[in-house]
Length: 71
Image (cartoon, rainbow, N blue to C red; front, side):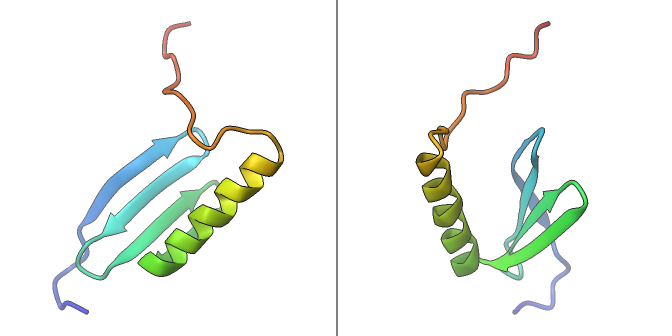
């Protein structure tokens, strides 16, 4: 673990929330409405696989196209 201050990289965001990563401490931050999770890289990979499996089972795509911003 580094003594450097955290520097968060914005990995992804949409209406469901945001995912950030600190390369200094190796922590992935899941920011969802009313909930924030901090996972190490292994935990994040396991969580991602779990969510993808659940999405497949309920018939939802795991990768969605970018939302059209025109109304």
